[in-house]
Image 1 (cartoon, rainbow, N blue to C red):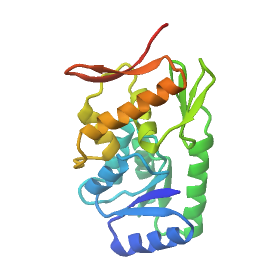
Image 2 (cartoon, rainbow, N blue to C red; image 1 turned 90 degrees about the vertical axis):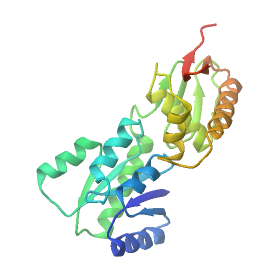
Image 3 (cartoon, rainbow, N blue to C red; image 1 turned 90 degrees about the horizontal axis):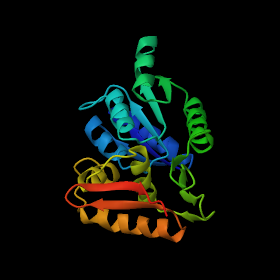
Length: 227
């Protein structure tokens, strides 16, 4: 289980990372809002743990940014404030749960377990477009037309997740690179072409009528061909 912890208090971040590691969580730590957003946009985490008060960007801003990008990774907010209005602001920004400092580690672990269960089993959590569906937590792509399924890599899954969260929209190579590899990442844009090719092959393998169409000079769009 992979977690992203964005916490600017170094001692707390180190202590939480060590404790979570002892519980078999794989933890990435960022100490400011900008780098936290960059990491969160990669979309490879099971849960994001965000402190509210961060340099650069607040936890509220990080949560709001990833939700606008269609990233549905569960978010647990950490804050020293117990004010109801502050909690409401966090939940409205896209957080799934809220924990006030100081807190017991056993409560943090219980909330993480609840969020990961919710992410895998929540009704209606599947992305659907045409004859394909994605179920978060399984990395499986299913085709209703053929009844076939195939396992996707994390990058392939993320590509389809982004397209299905932005249906009927044209996405540029730059937009895809941003959402897959993160803000201002140095990954070459031709990586997008490579993973798009892999994903197209998976769609063809299961006999789907859905395709990722390249639009010259504009970008890419998920389309359903009627045959």
